[in-house]
Structure formats: C-alpha cells, structure tokens
Image 1: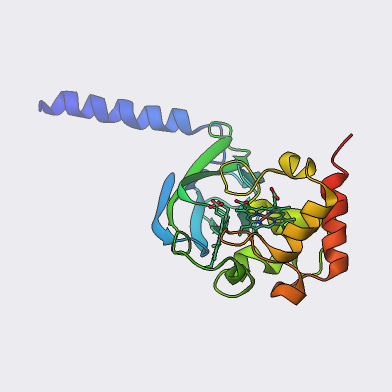
Image 2: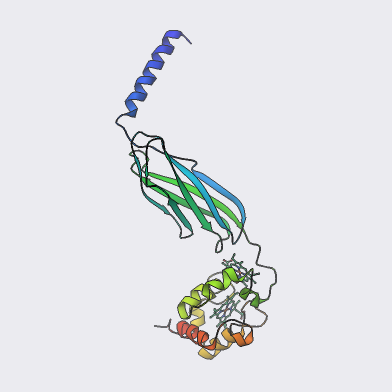
Length: 231
Ligand code: HEC
Ligand code: HEC
C-alpha cells in the first residue's frame, strides 16, 4: 500500500475512534451470547456461570435480569460494574419437569445507551432415563421416581396435592384423564380409583392400606377439590 494513503487512513481511523468514544458511556460485553448444555439426564439441576464485563468508561448498572421461565434463576453479586471490571451471573435450570430440546433466555437490562437489553440463549437436550420401562405404578413413591413424583406433595392436601402429584399424569397428552374429566365421575368412583389404583395401568393405589402413602382424610380432600371444580 502506498505509504501516504496508509497514513491518511490511520489518521482517519484514530480520529473516528476518538470521536465515537465520546461522550463517556458504559458498555456491556458478555462472555458469550449462547450456551449449550448438550445432552443431560432428566432430573439434573444444571448450573452455569458467565461473566459480564464493562468495556466502557462509565459505571455499568445492571438494572434488572429476567428469564422466560420459572426454571431459570439468575443472580449476580454486584449491580454496578466499574469500567474494566466483571460481574458473574449464575444460571440454574432444573430439568425435572422438562424433556427433549429446551431453550431459555436470560435477559439483562443495563444503562448501556447502545445495548440496554442483552439476551443470552441457553439450550439443553434433556434425556429421559426413567420412563417407558414397564415399571410398577407404585414405584412413584420410591426413588428414583419419588423425587419428581411424590416428594413435593408430602404434607399437602386438596388442590395443592393434586398439582404437586396428580397433575403429572392427569393433563393433556398423558395417560390419565384430565381434571375436568375426573370431575364428571361420581365421588364413589373417584374414591375407589384413588384409594386402590387402577390395576394394570399407571394409576397407583394412593391409600396407605393399599401400598400408597395417603391417609383416608387426604383422599377426601382430593375428592372434594376435584368435585368443587363444577360451577
Ligand atoms: C426427573 C423427574 C422424573 C422422574 C425421576 C420420574 N418421572 Fe415419571 N414423570 C415425570 C413427569 C414430569 C411426568 C409428566 C409427563 C412428562 O412430562 O413426561 C411423568 C410422567 C410419568 C407417568 C405418566 C406417563 C404418561 O404419559 O401418562 C408415569 C407412569 C411415570 N411418570 C412413572 C415414573 C416412574 C415409575 C418413575 C421411576 C422409575 C418415574 N416416573 C421417574 C417426571 C419424572
Ligand atoms: C403415575 C401416573 C399417575 C399419577 C401420579 C396419578 N394418576 Fe390417576 N390415573 C393414571 C392413569 C394412567 C389413569 C387411567 C387408568 C385407566 O386407563 O383406566 C388414572 C385414573 C385415575 C382415576 C380413575 C378415572 C376413572 O375413569 O375411573 C382417578 C379418579 C384418578 N386417576 C385420580 C388421581 C388422583 C387424585 C391422583 C393424585 C393423588 C392421581 N390420579 C395420580 C395415572 C396416574
């Protein structure tokens, strides 16, 4: 390259960068914009740390962080990052109730005048190791099944118990009838099925006398909840 042109170009570039850098401003830079956890066994709690750097020349303020699902929690130790400094963000994703390919976003809002909203994508492929193995229905009360199927219902009754335990098998695309279908059944039929299970299906007996974990009183609270849906 001709030496003179080179010098002119260089001068222009330096001038331009001085010019574009003022006025002073914070500037966010994240370690990456997407992260793939890869294949993970269902049930694992995934955790990932990433850095947010302030490459500007004024304090960067993290105003808010959010994510598009209740499964991802984000946090950082500092809300104000000085020029040249970093903060660490922790992302956790509980895969208990996920399956297949999942995608979540973490959104960071800052006072960076140019990139005030930064989105980071997280991906995972959740592999199910527990289902389609011809297990007995009652296995849901024991490990490794109970941590997803039963533990979170311990001590609950009525509606809360239904949504902690029953809903896993009683919603769209699962083998058990939906709540509105259950509501149409008589109290006697509900009682019989909940207490004794439905032989040869995934519906386990729930009453302690039949190998389940609920008392007669717990079963009554469930029946009352299911029948109270009718308006
Ligand atoms: C990591 C969490 C987890 C574990 C461990 C787990 N399950 Fe599940 N299971 C679920 C979820 C969530 C559903 C609801 C359907 C779905 O999302 O796949 C479900 C659904 C089911 C169903 C209903 C399937 C259908 O389509 O109607 C049965 C039966 C079942 N599980 C049995 C078991 C048994 C037996 C075990 C232990 C060997 C077990 N599960 C372990 C989370 C789990
Ligand atoms: C592991 C999966 C699973 C869980 C957990 C489960 N169910 Fe079921 N349930 C089923 C399946 C599958 C059927 C359908 C059985 C059949 O094919 O008749 C069923 C059937 C029933 C029926 C009988 C419906 C009828 O037509 O008579 C009732 C009532 C019922 N479930 C209530 C409950 C309640 C209440 C809970 C929570 C305490 C619960 N189930 C938890 C899988 C489950």
